[in-house]
Image 1 (spheres, rainbow, N blue to C red):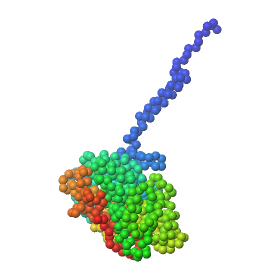
Image 2 (image 1 turned 30 degrees about the vertical axis):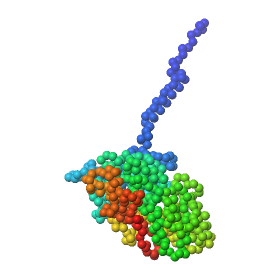
Image 3 (image 1 turned 90 degrees about the horizontal axis):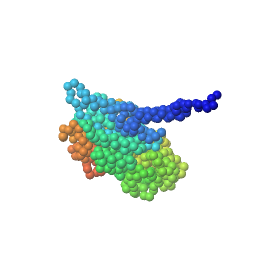
Image 4 (image 1 turned 180 degrees about the horizontal axis):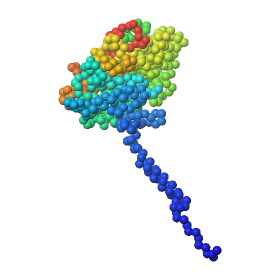
Length: 515
């Protein structure tokens, strides 16, 4: 062995453990870079590859698709599949008449009208999916009448002023509790320009604070909004109109009916939802203002089940029933959401246990409350409970020709032509959403008829809505409606029918109309 052995030569750094570690690090960085390059950015958070106007919001079980759908159908919920596909198909037909008119025909101009509202539901949302579906069916019927869809008979398309512009119906999803109204409204605001602008927003969900926020935001962008089933008097905005009666109008219509009762049957008890909900708060006030002699100081609260965060245990009616038993009240003035009404009926059906053996009438002002109480229909009869609902519509009466508005017949014909069953009319949402869209169409067509513009802007349409009176009322399915700039957006001359469940032999009596 040599006296001074030469030490082994060190291996290159890349062959030792340092090299292996470095290689792993490099590969990780490269892979990470590739993932970063392939990862969609925020603008690509779409609900499907072909739905650019829709994006996911929320997380986990609460995740839902919000934004705007136009010519590409998106199934927000399985039970909305058929109607959203039909709307998308009609929107495509409208575009094709502009871009690819038949030989020898001129392009047909079109504009957009939106339906803003929830497109999904839950056990605690104010709108069940059945009412959402019938809302879209009614809006689609108005679109088809305006566009003279091939499926319609000539009779169903009559009464719609002019033939152009055609209407694309944009569906704007704001979430089951209207939580994501901002995303939907921002998308809609971006549609007001170009050759085919958005001219109005209809629907607007239900009377809750989020609706107020959405209406204010639309107003700032100059967009007129037309609520289909909004009734709360504290829900007002500069460019917000409504085709429904107000809660005080519901109360006044009920007063006209209840004043026909014998004096001994007029003792009432007010049962009200205590939550921060525009509808229930203003309905309670309307009862207090219109029925002080019926109610006096007899009142009790409960916590409703709808909304994101009920404050307390919902749907506890124990105190209400005990108090109604104690006072022997035969009228229950209900200021709550329709989804809680069946539980009140169930609670009242037990009143015999505390000595109340008289019939009871539950009084409500709403659209669709009787329909939502259908699950306790048998209990009503067995327990001598009647529901009287002042409503924005009454399809059962109107189909029979009882106090039917003149505009109902052509609407009903179009609904049949489009193969929708009569059962879809029961909750009133199809009729009222049809009327909201029809109001937007009516104003738009009057503008184009006077100016010759192919596509009027939001300001022109807003101005015309305030002029829909005297010689130019809207021939809506729920009444001949008039609007002006001095009524906080409420309709004049709107009929307020009374629905009774179970049906009784009594005639409807004089029909109340909004002033």
